[in-house]
Image (cartoon, rainbow, N blue to C red; front, side, top):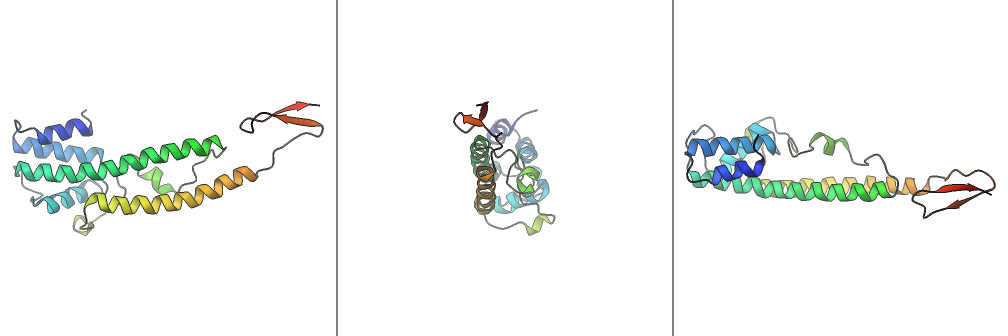
Length: 178
């Protein structure tokens, strides 16, 4: 099964028939479709000036649609990298459960980030712009929850037996009997 980048190469390949290039773009949506497959397809077609039912669209318009999708995907991948970095930091201070809401778990991988049931109801703005706003909102929610969780982890009482001394750097306390 080809990945997003391999499929994007197929969309750009001038040696391929326009219908094959269209199909490769549709398959890209199996890897990344912020509004859901159908709504994202309709959004890209509207923005690139392609009829969603056109089986042999203008290749330049297909590439324009692909470029919008790729830009939005880069926004999402940057968010995912940042999320992973923040989770490592949280785990380092003892926060084992992600403080974020269920939204991030539901949309892992970039599918259904902002589900749109009616394809005509997708926001008219470029995908990347919509995702930047969505990511800012998610990061603000996450930052509030993470600060609360980290504060709770730092304030949690360290259980010690009477007469023991704690050794270590605080990350993995070891109680040694005294």
